[in-house]
Length: 114
Image 1 (tube, helix red, strand yellow):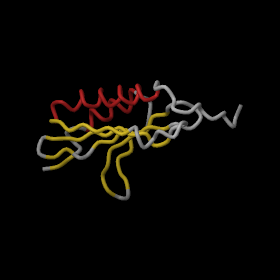
Image 2 (cartoon, one colour; image 1 turned 60 degrees about the horizontal axis):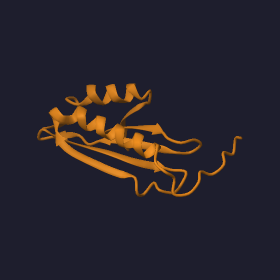
Image 3 (tube, helix red, strand yellow; image 1 turned 90 degrees about the vertical axis):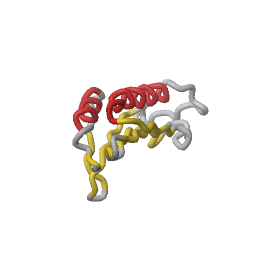
């Protein structure tokens, strides 16, 4: 059996703790993901979760856009059991936080709004 129902309360808690919107579908199919901003003006990161299946769940963290062109390098995933899901989300959020604090490979572009 596959379902998001068993993990939704935890996903909702993490999205709320980051004050971001939880998306629940993509291309007319169930999905769970949210975005969090990084270094202004343009950085964006995503944490997404596959549907839980056979007591297993996968969590993904990825850069959508970075100021220094490293978005393709900033991708990580975790696979674990449903009882470990909250811990996996904690690690994913901490990973994105570390990416936000990384040393930039190239200096940030100047903000077009300053």
